[in-house]
Amino acid sequence: MWVKGELLDDFVAAREIARGELDRSNQTNLFDRLDWFERVWAHCPPGKAPLIARARAENTDAWLFLARTDETTAVSLGSWYTLAFRPVFSGESDEKVRAAQLVALARRLATGLSTIILEPVPNSDDTANLILSAFRRAGWIGVMNPKTGSWTADVAGKSFAEFWAERPGEVRSTRDRKLKKFDVKTKVYTGFDEAAWASYEAIYGESWKEHEGSPAFLKAMAQTEGSAGTLRLGIASFEGEAVAAQLWTVENGRALIHKLAYREDKAELSAGTILSAALFKHAIDIDHVSIIDYGTGDDRYKQSWMNSREQLYTLELYNPKTLAGIIGAAKSWLSTLVRRGS
Image 1 (cartoon, rainbow, N blue to C red):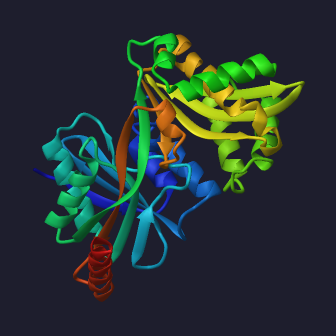
Image 2 (cartoon, rainbow, N blue to C red):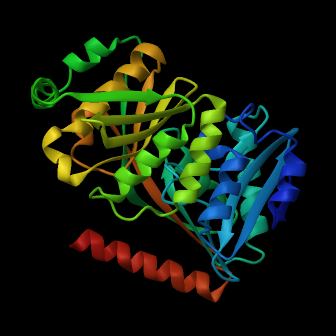
């Protein structure tokens, strides 16, 4: 099989080569699109320079979007907003072709890099194993360690009433009791609304959450998804004041929960629970999604709403033809021994 690999250092060249294959119309996953990587780089770059690897075979392309942190080290081109990172494939190809493409990418990357760190990588579809196998075939040392969890709910064919009946009694009674006691109102915006977004930012600023990493990134994302009709921005209000907010996107039968927050001084309202129920109802009964994804993190409250957990991984890739790669692999090996022994 003939495979051509190349390395790019800017998005203009990548966009010209991709010819739309990395756009929304051809990539069903939000985090696999070129505009996602461009937005990450514009607002919260994880390195000093982009490094885009591409391999072509059988009229299809494989892409790996990285960022150089120094001359010999690269990391996945993602941020705290990236809920899953993986190679991106365009065109129709089978597993054999994709494996060959990733081997070609790994060989090209070995010409200048000693270390590559990828995260958070899913493996329910064998993505992590595919990457590790390809890099090992290309001569790299690969290590896979657990990173965090991703919680989902399978709601295919269910109504919200059926889904709600399956939730723990504590969650259901909390919503019902608080709604009887407090007149909390909810609204779901399906397009970008400047006033609603201002409410979201104000709520987040007065919540228990850490400072938002890049408000500009999130607003740009909300505007783009609002224009595409995939935005679901929920706002809960009490006595005319916005007290809780959640940012979702809904596309291709999958709802993604990106952000949620409530005002700490209004915690007694349980507005977050009330708003969650409203958004779950909208996603299930109106958008008719099959999967609801609560994103990354093993927060305890997610278990009350979800029914399945997927492990996400960090992949450490070391080039044994370099001194830094050998040292990095040795340190990783020792760290793994320590963890297993503790």
